[in-house]
Amino acid sequence: MIKHLRLGVNIDHVATIRNARGGHHPDPVRAAIMAANAGADGITAHLREDRRHISDHDIKRLANEVALPLNLEMAATPEMLEIALCHTPNACCIVPEKREEVTTEGGLDVIKFRDHLVPYVEALREKGIRVSLFIDPEAAQVKAAAAIGADIIELHTGRYCDNAGKKRGLELDALKAAAALGAGLGLEIHAGHGLGFETVTEVAAIPEVVELNIGHFLIGEAIYGGLEASIRRMRALMAAGRRATQNIKTA
Image (cartoon, rainbow, N blue to C red; front, side, top):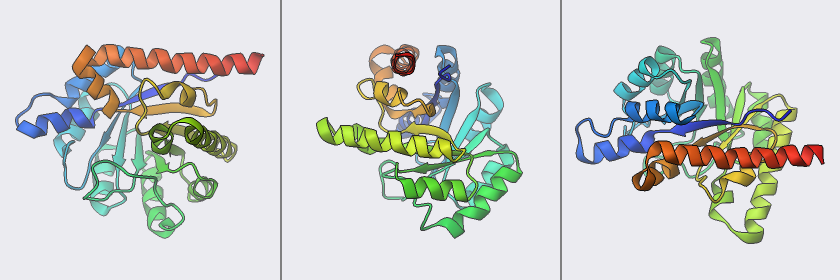
């Protein structure tokens, strides 16, 4: 039996639009509730050092007002650890963060920053918070994530989404290999970054992947057809990918 593929909806860019003008509209918490109604399995929000989109107040409200599990994306800093330990989300996904970047540009270098990351992983897990590391689909990074005690890896799908043809195929192969390796090491496998209607199905078909986190694309599509409709279409495409996996297993 193929596991249900969960969808985590990242609502960061609802807050981006709100902050462009100030005030309270559009409300990311309202968007999270709409996502739940449309079939999302979780809500993801990235609290950045510069608070460019999600705010501390948003995190507090998401933790208190939304029934779905909250996945807090965060850099490994003392400030973010304190916030995470205060709100105890279902999971924390540790990501690399540079103030000058528009969005997260690549995976976390777990090998290079091992000694820095270990205390954060331990502190979060001691509080009962599941720890995810956002990494590129590389065997050495997968092994390093398992070695420092992460519960989850989220495979960075940006290179897969940004390429086409043979190069995209090679990136898909890398995702498949990393997912299989991680699952074999006892890690839960998530994936995300840049996924849209045209790219989600093949990633959804990777059997070891149990959750996709998608945000910017869904918020953009909501302009044209509404957030709930966009999420429902994404769920249908994810289900199509999962059925393809089932067909391969039973062939």
